[in-house]
Image 1 (spheres, rainbow, N blue to C red):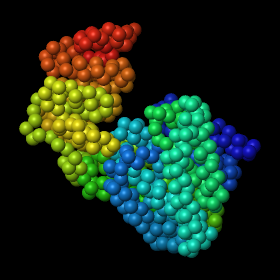
Image 2: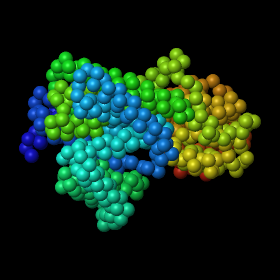
Image 3: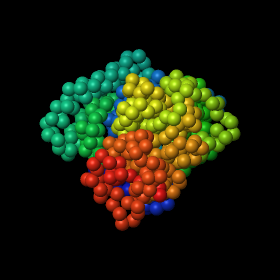
Image 4: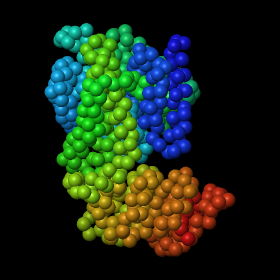
Length: 570
């Protein structure tokens, strides 16, 4: 225990200065955490680092299992299955064949194929946290691809855990794995709600209960001689995903996840050994296949299935790294003597390098997309948008509403009450059926994609309202050339004031304006009780330094000019 605590202390002592540098310079933390691991590796025993990596990955897989929402990703799951299988078969075959070509035995070449084929859920969800929470389609597609790959990786872990590569031991391992997953379903359905009632609303008891579920499943996995990662994944599935009902639980789990994310990346750096020439060559091949070939294959599959080029590119650039499951497979294979040191070290080195390059490619994914698009390397296919959209061909003088959340729904209801034509633009797969059932006209596409706005006939629109507090969307709309008045939404007053300097009619500041108040302003604008000039002039003074934009919220009496919480340009 003392050795373990000492190792963790070394990890965070090494990570601290690098995280401070990342925070001060606005750099992505992943590369610097891995570099910190290179420093920590000078003081950490490799066996201890391997043990810590196994349990660290298990706990991260647990947190990922909690976050899985099948109902959210099911609308893109069929496409994700195709992309995931395409990656595994295409990239995996290339990596395996490349290993054979340079003289690596077939048994070890298969592990190279697994390393190149599988993508990291931990890295992907960490880098795309905001996109997934904002329900952007590329975030959901990437999340579902990683889910499919993780399930396949779990099967490989179970096979690897068999005493021999024979039918009976493999069947036994698969049976144990299936029992753990069935146990998770039963706990989720019958036990977790009982746990919530016994906790009596106590967040601490709920967190302890969730960790207890994890301990039980890991214990069951070890008792069955199954990888602890399989047990941790099953434990995550056993915890009911209901962030509204158990918000404190999920905040607590998120804090635990952040703790082990730091340990994970530092441990990866610590496992990197001084490479030989053979190790460097193998790792270089894995990096090329993982960071270049795999995104290209994924991009081609998604575009062929009708996804717009931007979603395909951004999805592909979020899964261009070696998976933590591939690392667990490699670690267990190394312990069992199935991998030579050069191949094992190459997989570790490639994982560290691709996790660094992935953080960079995700950070500059928009710029990469623009370069590919401007050079004509992306085919213009919009089959998904056309198939999922319904817009009258003669619609004019209409309102375009981007986002069908709470405010979007209220705006749609208002437009229908006053017979104002409208078009909703939405791209969250989880609400596609709802949009189709409740809206007269809609475009199911990416708000960052020009074709979505073309489909909504933005050139003939009267007003464009974005209810999405996502700065890239706001900047994309500002850069467009349509003539309709523009209402945007942002998270901060500072950002609102900046947007108002760029010819925006109105900016809603999240948490400062109730949805009902926004609706009343829009209705007053549409029926002529409020002019655009009046709307622009009304609020900017309240957001100047020293003023409180919330001070008059209690004065709201139905008169649009008496409401607060939003800003306009004077």
